[in-house]
Amino acid sequence: MKDMALWNEGDWVAVIAAIILAAFLTGGMLIAASKKQEPLGHPKGLYMLFFAEMWERFSFYGMRALLIFYLTQHWLFSDGESTVIYGAYGSLVYITPVLGGWLADRYLGQRKAVLFGGVLLTLGHIAMAVEGDGGQGDPAINVFWMALALIIVGSGFLKANISVMVGQLYKLTDPRRDAAYTIFYMGINVGAAAGTILAGYLGQTIGWAYGFGAAGVGMFVGLVVFVVGRSALRGAGEPPAILAKGKEFAIYGAGVAAVAVMWALIQYREVIQTLLIVSGVALLGYVLYQASKLEKEPRERIWAILFLIALNPLFWGLFEQAGGSLNLYTDRYIEIGDIPASVFQSINPIYIILFAPLFAMLWQWLGRRGLEPSAPAKFALALFQVGAGFLVFVWGAQSVGMAAMTPVLFLFLIYLLHTTGELCLSPVGLSAMNRLAPSFMASLIMGAWFYMTAVGSFVGGKIGELTGGESGEMSKDITLEIYNQIGWIAIGVGVIVLLLSPIVKRWMHLDTLEDETVDDDLLGQSELGEPGGAGLQPGMRPQN
Image: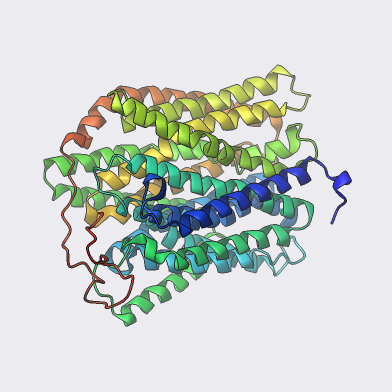
């Protein structure tokens, strides 16, 4: 261990992150030990999902912070190709929840889908620690592709479904829902911040295997939390009907087979663009077909959902520059001292931790006064802020001269504006999907939300590729030119969305939204005969 007197900024940041993570774990144990059914005003199940997702995000974002550097420095891909791989990987991570959500809706239920996904994710993150000798000719690169494939499929079973389970803890008209999703979003970002700092620090200062190994340990802990905390879910996430063991294991087998498919896709990335187009048209057609069979109000709610979902590719395509081109820019053109560049990926989740409670209180305060912006208006605000972030960053870089290193202040500013934009879009979007979607399409709609995020990740990879120019190697002037262009495009689209927001708000029909009735004889209460199964505890009314 290095002598404390010799610690640099990076060492201190890593230690502080470890201490803060320990503090959150202590708080989690106190909540788990509480005898109250709703500590701090929310069901105990929310906090269990908070900590399970926190550890999953620890592993995912820890790996994300390192991935672009692992591709360029260890496997020796060019900057341009690395950003495309990064974008392709991100798109597959977000497209697989469409299928995972559908399987959970129809067969597995969300809890079993999350459990299976967690196992695959744990295996994938552990496999990432197998680094070999490096270079594209190293046979160990096949283990790397397999690790990405396991993470992609595991995310498909976990990502949409754990978000749906948060909504199942509350009635549709419960005013705490938006606050609950914001609290849940804080769990995501506590894990993201800690994972980014600790895995990034270990990976870039000690060795790749240490960084990715830490991510694997985090995922395993998240899996344990989810299993141990099952009783706190109060029946949320159980299968819609009794599922034969043969069919259940066939689904798991199909998931394993999907890993092989993803192993091929991540290597042949030109196929992914075609896949996104074809599957996107098919998904849109299916959702519109289902909407056509509904009454006027639920049908128009589907239209509102599609409008909001359609904005995802632009927002996330710009936002995802963080882990790709902006990560490379930070390493090469920003004055960051002795702190590894990957650690700066933690700025966004740290801002979320700080600002998420403020935004939750702001929306509630405005809501009580009838002044809260509608969901589409909040989306317009998100686009304004992501665009402004790029413009401020470009101005800051140019203000000191192109030959000088960009002051780190402007990195903090771009992340600040992107984070406040994210808080206007992501938790609001998650809540809107769960609230507006018919119950029989809940996970599919959530999967569609992540699907369009997948398109955004792929677009983000292509934008990042442009910063490499013809040579494939990033240049400062071209990167800033691209950032200036996409900043103005985002602001222009935001203006259009703001003008259309009153129409979309009418489609949502929030004034007539009602809770659905639930049969008292829920699955798991009598059919399964399993303690802690899907049904209700004696005397407990349904929460959904």
